[in-house]
Length: 289
Image (cartoon, rainbow, N blue to C red; front, side, top):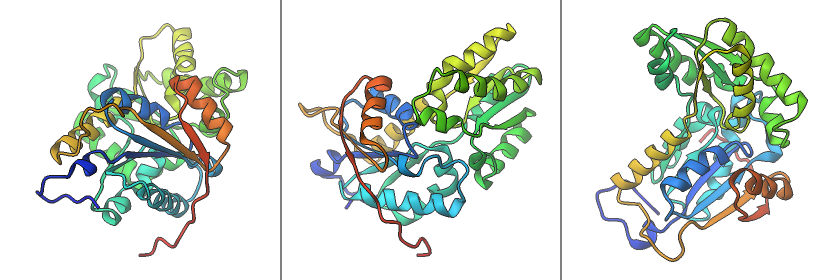
C-alpha cells in the first residue's frame, strides 16, 4: 500500500500503474495527454459505459459508481487515480480523497480560470453536463473566478451530447445539429472563449470549430486535459512515484462495463492504440462509511 509519508517509495511502488476512469470514452481525451507526458508509466483505463452518461444521474449514484470503480482499480495496486470525468470529479473527488488517503487522486474541472485569462470580451461560454453545472463544486468555482476577474460565464448544459460521442457519432448530422444548438447562442451573446467542460467534448472540437467559423468570429477553446497531465506529473514527482524508464514502458490495459468492441474501436479510432480490453462488472456498496 502506498502512502504519503516521507519514506522513499520502493521500486515496485514507483512501477505501480496509474488508474484512469470516466463514464465512458471521454476520459481518452485526458489519457492521450497523460500518456504523452508520462510515457514510462503503466495505465489501467476504466470506462463505465454500461452506466453512461453520468451527466443527468443523481449525485449519490455517481458517488457510488466512483467508489466501486476506485475499489476495482485498487486490485491492480495503482499508485494514483485520475478521475477523467468532470461530473464524477464534481460529485465524488472529495470523498475519494478522504476514502483513499494512500493514493494520489487527480480530478478534472472546467477550465474557468484559464478561460478568464484568455477572454477579451469578458464573456465565456461553458459547455458541460447538467450534473457538472449544478454541482456545488462548479458553482463555487464559477463564483470565485467571476468575482476575481469580472468575467461573465454562460453555462450551457449539453444534454445528450456526451451520449452521441459515446455512440461514436462524431460526425453525424444529429451530433452536428446538437453542437450548433448549444454553441450558437453563446456566440450570439458575445462569448469569445468556450470551455469544454466535459472530457467527451474534445472529440467533437471540429464540429464546434465549424459553428464558430460560420460566424466569422475569433473564439478560443479551453480543454484542461494537458493541465490534468501536468498536475499528475507534479504529484508523482513530489512523492517520488514516477516510474523509471524500462523496456516495459507505456503498458495499457482497459476495462469496461459496456461493450468491449465499442471501447476497442474508440481506442483505435481516437488514440490509434489497441490495448487489451475486458468487459467487467463492479459491485456498488453503500457509500455511507
